Image (cartoon, rainbow, N blue to C red; front, side, top):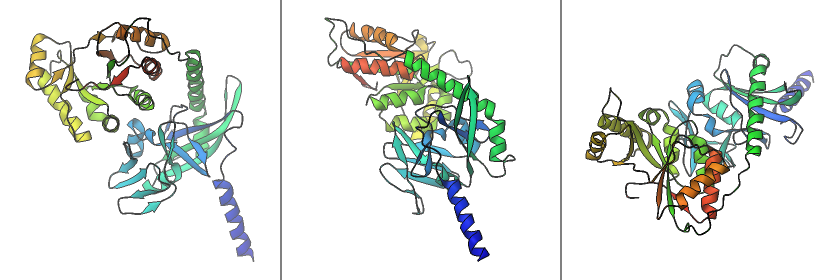
Length: 380
């Protein structure tokens, strides 16, 4: 009898531990995400959420520092998301309620798509890859506001702190992350996207716009916006970016974006041709493809001839907007005016000054004016 009572009590405790937290509609509820020793930045597009008793986390976190910390990488294309480590991979196909590995084993639940992001069940990922996983109740205070929610924590086995100890130690960082999150929300609300109207009498209909951007920290956000508007652009990547950002390169290729190589003619260690060769080698390793598109910074007539002799098409923009940031509706309106003032199709060099919000404003305006944003190619 005692054994049966003890077993029943254990089951009850397990059910309590697995039960989801209060609904997110509760005032002030939020969910933090931690990997290893780091509390990750917060955003509406990547915040974990509960569904059917499972906590789902954004698959896009398995890049950069988190990939290095947990030793789990991510590959995403139009059909599926694959999480992988040395010798193991877990496949999530869009529209499927299950996941599977390369041996044919089936796992539940599958992935969930939300706001263009693929979310995966944290518990399944932890179990499959041998990680430790916990969800801890947290309360923090920011600007006098008490915020209650969860801290989801993924880490390798053998970590020295208990979940409660880690949550206490990370309280200041969580408060800082939440303050940044609130500030970004306020800035977005203040910078309401207003679709700029094309100037009267300016011909816009049917114009093809070739947006050319430098790949960098905002690339993932820019890709999100392009996906949302079913638009394409060309991303010019340094050799270092091509060597380090395989996941983003694969996402570009799968989404129909053009990939180009950004080189510097003033580099004293490698010639333009050597930089281009190194960039294409890294691109082929990441995507099994190559490019013949490039932009030569600090170019000279000799360096451009060197690139062209190697078979590359060098960017010659009709409109150079690299000195102007594309950050909101006003800069989007200015860019649209510049595009509209030119006859025929227009190639625009934006450099590294575009944000997701600014690109969204411009794509919205271009679509309203019946302009088409397409990828710059070898023949465009």
